[in-house]
Image 1 (cartoon, rainbow, N blue to C red):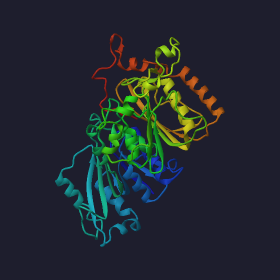
Image 2: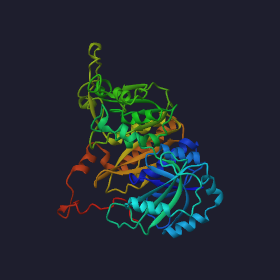
Image 3: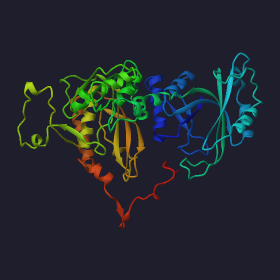
Image 4: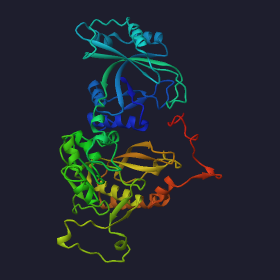
Length: 475
C-alpha cells in the first residue's frame, strides 16, 4: 500500500535517499530501487509530507522509521482533505476491513494532533479530537502505552517568507502510526558531551546518516581512511558494525590528548566495541599487501578538501621535489618519529579513494563520502561528480554550508569486480574529469574560492539581502 511518510524539515536532499537505503538494508538487495514516491497534490517537493510505496509489509515500514534520522513517522493514511469535512468523507470511504481491526474493544488507542508551519493550542487540539466521534472506537483510551496511535496532521497556508516551502492550500491528514523515529541517540552522541573531538569532527546526526547510507549493521566491516577522532566509526559501531580506521597523523590515532582522551575513549564512553584496529596510514600510499582485496563492506569517510583542514600525504616537499633522496628512519627513532608530509590536492585524494574502494570493497559494498561543490557551478549535473567503472552512483545529497559552497554526500555501490583493465579505465576517467571539470580541485583553489572577496560591478556579490528566506528550491 501507499504510506504517508512524514519527514523532519531538515537536510531536505537526504530524506528520500535515506529511506531507500534503509529499505535496501532491511528488505534485501534491490529493495531500495523498488521504493516508489509520490508527491501529494498542491505540495512542494520540499514538503515534509510524501507518499511512499515500500516493497514489503508494515514490518519493513516500522524498521525504516525506527532506524531513520529524518523520518518523523510512517502512517497508514485513512484519509486527507483541504477541510475537516473533506477529511471525514475520506475516512468514511476508507475500507472497513482496513479500519475495524484497530477499533476493537480489546485494543487501546490514542489520538495525537500535530502540525507543520503553525501552532495549535491545547483547547483547539481537544476540539479537533472530539470531532472524530464518527470513528467507531470501541477500545479504551491509553495516553502512555496505547496499542494503536492515530495522528491528525495539519499544515496551513503560512506564507512564503518564514523559511518553509510554499504551500498552495491547507491540508489535513488522518492516519494510523506504523512506525516512528527514535532520535534519542542524538542527545546521547552530541559532540559537546564527547570526550575527544577535533575541529573537523563530524556532527553526530550527519555521521549516523552516513552510516545509514553505508548500510552499517552487525556482521559488516566499515572502514574510514580519514578517521580523525572517529565520529563516523562511532556511528557505525552503534549500529553493530565492526570498524577499522586510518589517518596520516600519528598523533591523532596514537596519542590524542592523553591516555584518557583519545579515539579509544570515545568508544569506551558509549560502551561500544572498539575498532579492530586504527592505522597510521597514508591514503596516497595504502599499506595493504599485493593481492589483498574485497574485505570491506563499506568505506565511509569525509576526505579533507582544504576549507577547514587541508589534506596531507607522505613525503615532504623536499623529498617530492627530489631535493633530498629517500631515507630510512633509524630503529631507535621509530617510536616517536613523525613522518614528513606534503599537501594533498582534492583531485589526487578523490582519485586515490576511488582506487582504494574499487579494490577493497566487496561486490555490492558502498562507498559513502563528502565531495565539495562551489555554489556557482551546476552541482546537479552528475558529470560534475567523480566516476569509476566499478561504481554506480545511487544518491547525491547536497548540504548547503554557505552562499559560496556546499558539500554533496555521494553514495556509490560497487557493481563490477576490480581488474587491471578496470584500473586503466579508472585512470582514464580520472584524467578526463580532472582536465575538463573541477579546476578548483588543485591545492588551495577551493579555499581561495570560498574565502576570497567576491565582487560584481565593484560591489560585493553577496550581502545580507541576497540570502533568500527559503533556502530550498522553488518550483
